[in-house]
Length: 281
Image 1 (cartoon, rainbow, N blue to C red):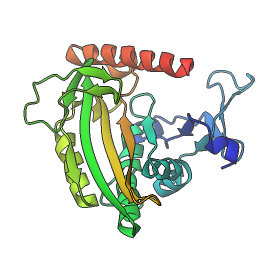
Image 2: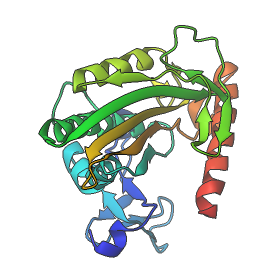
Image 3: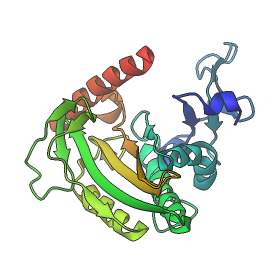
């Protein structure tokens, strides 16, 4: 990655998933091609072969054969390194329901080749800490979801409780009374995430049997204490936000009704607001 690219505050990376069983069984043809070197996605019209293809350029692109570890090392490792140096960073997956957001973020945890961004970041952080010699680290984790525009603490015993957003001059925007747990190794932070995952809102639609019905944010705060040349302890704090967004939906494709339709309406509304924020940036 070039120096100019590494200094940019927002990067957009696109990953194309392989066709699923339903699509293959229906005889669908792939209309998307990926140029990894140029960072381009080319989309052909399924209705008119003579129509010029649409070309979209991003910071990085990955095709359906891409490996989880390559995606992490090339795209996310530099960001997590910056968090360990005391900066804040956010990684979130955005896309239509069923496009592989949760797989990219979480993957298969007990499979080293298929584990996603989140477990790879856990391994990354605690490997770095274990190799440090002159620093003392404290790692805290919290986990929340935004379900129908209400904030839930996924680590709280009382799942009916709703939390509030607050703002302070010294810390900025924060969630009042959000649970936080100190973790000392990969196993401990994985246990924290597993507890939260059991409380997440998921449901089945026509497009995804395990559709996330909420936006989930796993926050890792890394505090580092180091003795400076002045003989004083200096503390730096970095924060990593790992976000699994609910997928944007079309009711005609998902077949959402009743509560699922209500969820989808809230999901699409919040994703629209997020899009406005990104456009403003």
